[in-house]
Length: 319
Image (cartoon, rainbow, N blue to C red; front, side):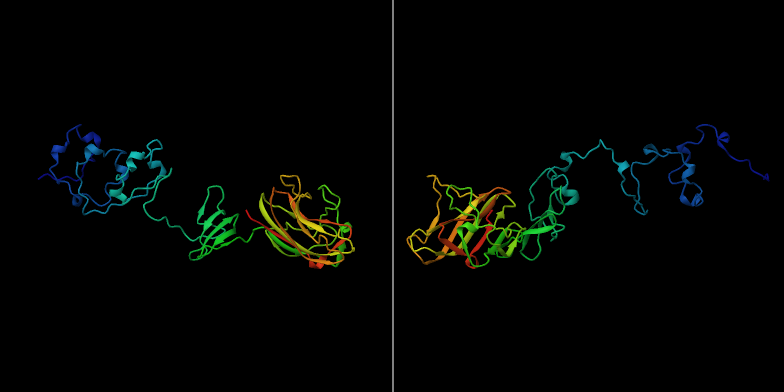
């Protein structure tokens, strides 16, 4: 047997083109045991050299470990959108167990459950403001928040709490005041007076902003219907019967005129000379635009005087 002290390196020139064909390799003739570990690296295989034609129709990977990588944006063609027919009723149920809710709108077959949330991060919000929406502060309670603060909460019995609802309560100040202590209103009749500036109203409490001031006027922070109530205590200084008084709530220093052109109002002390007239009270529901104001406006005869410490004015926004 001839002995060889060296072997010539085999390269592409040493193999005749098409001399080695698939027929020269029996099925499973080349096994992993015949190839040294790491002998064939990815650099030894041209890109796309192994294509679908080089692989059998069926590959048995049952005894192999297959490693997957995450799908990247570049893996999905922007023009290859998932069309609606691919998510039609029943199309996705087999794969994911449910039919996805259409982004454009749809109906759920069960409850939609969301986190409890908070005033600063409501459970359900709009796209324009993440701090405005609905949340659930306690069991069976529902709250509406705007700009990160609770504006209305319904408790488990349905009772509403509106902490920012405009409301006020104020009392008069001091002793007796005659009609000329207060300025005339813009209403016809020189004796209609607006109870401002004559005394300093004492604000007992108010909420929803500083809408009522010590001058005696409540300025509407928002357009809507408001309810007002006022009461006082009067004395007729004259022995005649002309010490009566009318009471009303004015809007922008003007008394509301009814369909007949006359202002509907209460009347107290009519025909009662030199006497106290207690129990003066009046209420009114007014529609105010933002910036309109309401104030107490009595019709006072020159001989009539009212007591500051026995007077009050209050009101609140109905809606």
